[in-house]
Amino acid sequence: MRHQDPAIAVALTALTPAGVSVGHRVIAAGDENALLEEEAEAFERSSTRVRRESGAARHVAREILGAWGFVAPPLPRTGKGPPKWPPGVVGSLSHDDTIAVAAVASAEAYRGIGIDVEPAVPLSSELVELVATPLERRRYAASILESRVLFAVKEAVYKAQFPSDGVFLDFQDIEVDLELKRAVTRNGRNVAISVTSVPRVLAFAFIAR
Image (cartoon, rainbow, N blue to C red; front, side, top):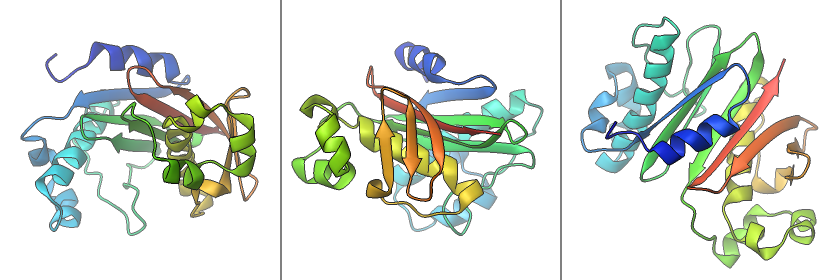
């Protein structure tokens, strides 16, 4: 239990859509050793911190996949960045400097899923301008704009749509409607979302079949 945060577990359970398995881990020294040989090559030039965070996220994903009957599958980085998942599976990884999270679903039920975790600290004014579209800046109060809520949602949306659409998106290419719990990308993809800012900013995005 020392690698679990009960508040994070509760928040993730509340956010997770049906048919998706999710887990988390408090990142700890030694998690860099969780990178398998097939995964470690992509991180050879990375700092210990980056390898540790990436190892922790993959550790969580392998625990979920193990419960699904997979035996320690490698999740190597693809040439375009996202990990390569086992056949029949879609998934997503994320971490900040403290928490690693992973989500897994059947490719028969979902085209893609995305997850993101961020510390609950404000964005700089420069990042607010970068992340929020003009419509979002008119729509939302400063408390939302200055939080990392839109940032996390857009990160999750990008991860959810990329496996099926293969589209590289900027923050300005995604319009978020928190009331309707959806986002729309510049190529017309509608993505369902869920998000919380307590105890950390956690965002889900998912595209059902």
